[in-house]
Length: 229
Length: 242
Image (cartoon, helix red, strand yellow):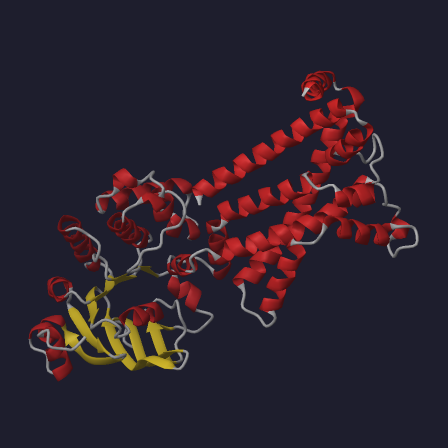
């Protein structure tokens, strides 16, 4: 109990002083997860919306693929990206392994199907009368589609937040492709693992508090959006 | 082609899967006034209205709107000259004001004009106090009023109304009927109802739809008071089995 209390005191001091690159680690985490979420949205939202809105042969397969993608194990994704980017891999010439871009790639692969599947579910849950009403009021087909997507905006907002929440708390993939290099690829989750292993609980707790605060904000946002649905 | 006709329909047939819901429907709807389509539940009235508003494509047949054949390329432009208030109103997840301003917005009206139009029309239907309220917090009757206002906001040349007062209390129903009558003085209103009292009060011309077929059409007074077909007589006298 004493260790935990001391840990919290040290954590508070660390957060104020910014020692041990605490704020650098936090900033990097937000950068990697933020970029991955943006890229995940750029891929997942159009894919989820297109699958949800259109009728086409193979739709079931596309939905199944999204759902499988949603449950991809992060360490397997990390391994896959590692093999792609390693010196002997097909993308080795890009020299991205153990860099922030590599971490962003891995987390994008995790975020995109999650955001896509939740977008699909959001779009499918919208009353189809929205489109008919829009057309009857003079909207073009494109405008009516945009209106229908707009009707799913709260649920889609929740999908984005869920995607961000998943990648910011992820550790396996970023550890494998980032390598947890101090000042370079170290993020909150990998730092917490490292510092816990070393017994430096104060840094681990400081980062844990920040991660909890972010998770709380994410969940608060999710709850807020769901109340609006 | 009759220049005095708002809508001409020739040999319209429509199916949902294998079920034929409209068979060889032909109709002439003159410009101006209220044209009432009445008939029992499941006769195909709402389907016919959606086809006339060009929201669905018929299996076969021809629809001529305001003198122009409703070809695929002309459908969007023709749709912009019409509007519809549905039986079960769907309101967008926005404020009442934004809902009413939707039609003017997609037509490119400036923001100020569409805001003013929304206020004006909501005042006319007696729902101006709802303008800022989220649409999903409305009662069914309020939603029906707003849906009506939304359709009227675009000043359509042809206004389709599908059971416009089913959820309204008598004062609001009266207000809506007065508004429809006023609107019909300058435009064409196609009203679907199974409320014969409302049809008698409002319609200038009427058609009786039964099991997907137009049984009888002509002046409303004649059809509603002295119908010729035995099915119309049975429906009006309340003897038609449900």
